[in-house]
Amino acid sequence: MSRPRGPLALVDARPGPGFQVTFDGAPLDVLPGQTIAAALWSAGITSWRRTRVEQRPRGVFCGIGVCFDCLVTVNGVPNQRACLAPARPGDEIRTQDGDGHVEV
Amino acid sequence: MTGAACAWYAVRAGLRVVVLDRGPVAGGTTGAGEGNLLVSDKEPGPELNLALLSTRLWHDLSQEPGIGGEIEYEAKGGLVVASGQDGLAALHTLAAEQRRFGVESESVAAESLTELEPHISPSYAGGVYYPQDAQVQPARAAAVLLREAVRQGAVLHTGTTVTALLRDVDASDDTDDATGGTVRGVVTDRGTLRASWVLNAAGTWGGTIAQLAGVRLPILPRRGFVLVTEPLPRVIRHKVYAADYVANVASDSSALQSSAVVEGTAAGPVLIGASRERVGFDRSFSLPVARQLAAQAVAMFPILERVRVMRSYLGFRPYLPDHLPAIGADPRAPGLLHACGHEGAGIGLAPGTGYLLAQVLTGKAPDLDLTPFRPERFEHDGDQEDDQDGSEGGGE
Image 1 (cartoon, rainbow over the protein chains, first blue to last red):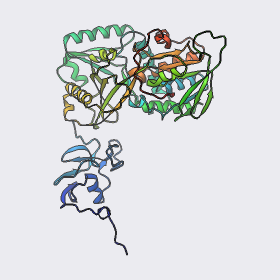
Image 2: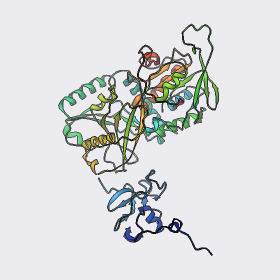
Image 3: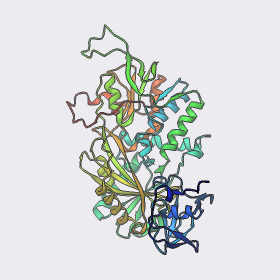
Image 4: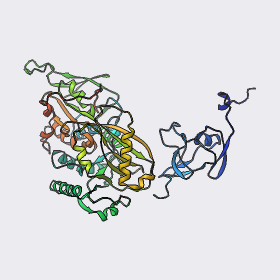
């Protein structure tokens, strides 16, 4: 019987103490160094934006900052790339509707 | 784009067409454009005539089944603004001259600018509105035109580089050009194609194709950056630019020029141009250029200060010394035609170019006099500076 080996075990990571952020109001546990996308994926969340025209769900596509598909609202600021933005203690992450601007 | 338009109009004229592209469709300058279809920035002359013809043809294309709904054609209109009374007077003079050649425009008083653009800076002395200015999504437009051309019988080979031209050996040719016989087709890295006509629509790399025929076409790259903002609700309604843009377009300097050209898009992001530099084919990002463009856009639309730029892209406008494209048959190489060198106006001028060349190819007199665009007009200029760094040839 081998025990399941997650990414932390595979690289023998010893991360520092975790912290919390919220996603649509619900608390999430995050490890230091995780991007917002990594934090959301670790919690089993794969979609955090709805498209502008047809309200289709979107999450990580390229994962390397190129495609701008993973845009999300963090601390009231829309259009952050979740795959690049590091999660910080207390971040309020919210599902982004369309362009994320109520009005400009 | 120019090649796609040439293919489309040639097929419609009943010709058999093979399109060769060394890369993917819209992989060169077309894919780095904004898709502007402008009459407002052109002084009276042959380019304006070509732009007016093209504007009508773009409108027709926007009604064409299979094309119209797919190219994001938007007759949004252009607004040119002037910051001082002198600039405004010059702008009014230009608009009056353009009007004699069929360019529609309306003067907009300073206090009325916000009726057209609610978020524009209050600092402008006034402007001129050009309802004929329009926009397409250039990569889509090129791809859709090619798809429809193929549907009507054209053949498309992407990833195919032209390496040589097939020429007749013409013993009676007493020119000193040893390569001088009639062009009969092309050699590519994937085989040989015979053809009655070879049309060079390689854009910024068109000089290289000309070289394969032993003729000189001094096309130089003129780099431009575009900044792309995060998607926004519709805050900018027209294409808006400062009057000094026209002077920048006509400039011969190799140093950086930029003036804000700002527009909203159907998809949401705001596009911010337009910089002009002659730096060869240097693709490296330039922070000073991006900063200057952003500052100029914020000066024009202060609301953009709170908006983030998501990314930028750059491209190389195909630039000929007199700022006119090369369009027409090349008497130095019978069988070869050119359709390149449209600088920053290639998307706008593409249909007119394709339409007129289809007339040439079918033996008709073109609707516009092509003399100002004749490709051999630089023959006696002497040696020009040549900053094409090892470019590859290839039909667009």
